[in-house]
Length: 499
Ligand code: MSP
Image 1 (cartoon, rainbow, N blue to C red):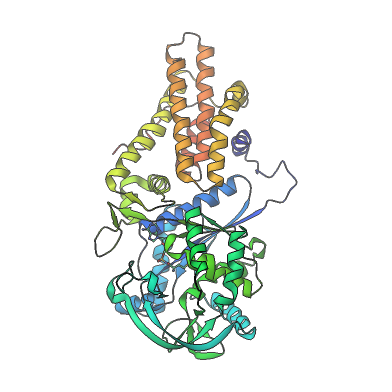
Image 2 (image 1 turned 90 degrees about the horizontal axis):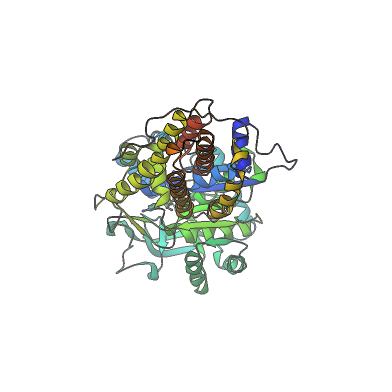
């Protein structure tokens, strides 16, 4: 497979060209982020994570759809827009440009940027809500409860700590009593539970699946899906006094995107990548709505934990929020992508800091990968080596052995979305190349043919490594190919400058 990957790239053959099969589709999504602020490191980590999965799937020949975007309704977005004393829609337009600017700069290969104020999205939301209403799955009632504006969510007693939301400032908590339209979540939650138990909806990692199953064992209440007399949001089509609850509107983005793009073949989503705080919405509320609508449910919800900064939750009031710009300024585009992927928290929250990032950047990128590439390029220049057809043949045996040692492990880590696993295997592979080089010492070998063969073997390994690094650090992978896939290999400036 890897041989094909590399050869295909060199001969510009599509990875599908040797099969007659239609590529399978793969739909991966990020959450759509609130437009009340610019992205921070957490949003950036999720987005890059989803991009890496999308790029990996493309590299193995799947037809991929990656969506991301902005969640533009809800109280906090509206209040934030007003506080900037601008026209709300203009503010949202500016914010959308700002978020896109980051994703473009970071080479996020999204196919579609969702905006929930798009009239085409609004129409899909209204159509789906009307269907639920006509079916009798939405009914009118009164809701009284504790609402957290920060989460845009009614909270249960169990979710509060001393009466407050653990995620947001105390002033974000309000008591609300309002006439609302309820969705019969309680009718559908047992079906969702069964689907999760049978893994028809996969929630990963396992501890996040268990959290949902435990909550589904308790009483599930119907979901309030509208706000009365709101100023901002999509109107309930049959009762214009009400606006649709921002989460119901937002979740539908995953469906409206394929409708708007006319790409229904991508349905259902293969994976929703989300942070732990929004697991319930994606693993229970969203599938329940889809079941009620007779639409196929997503195959998987991948729920990562959160980055903490130097032991604390990232928060504006603590002043410890790390911006993507700060990371880009210090580590470059690929450095930022690599560090966020390598430190992606899985089962539990994980601590990061600039000290940690500096060390990881220096050891893995500047020393590990960067050094190997410089060293081998210099040797190749001295030995007058170029990349030619057949280079793979000479070292085939060695690479078949490496296939079992590293490559299959890298692929299975990618398939399990374990990016830190991928990165660790690649590091082992790089170490192995360095050891091999030291052992063979081609610089001290008087037999030039032997020395050349040894260096070529390492060049092939580096190209295999770069193929697997492409989803994570695409620009660097391209640079590596440019350095080695040429008639006359020359020494080169370091790929990563040490910090
Ligand atoms: N608008 C909703 C999502 C609607 S999706 C239909 C929302 N937006 S958000 O702007 O608050 O973004 C939340 C997401 O940002 C989390 O799910 C997670 O992906 C990411 N992160 C926010 N803080 C984070 C960390 N500290 N660490 C890692 N990711 C985190 O919720």
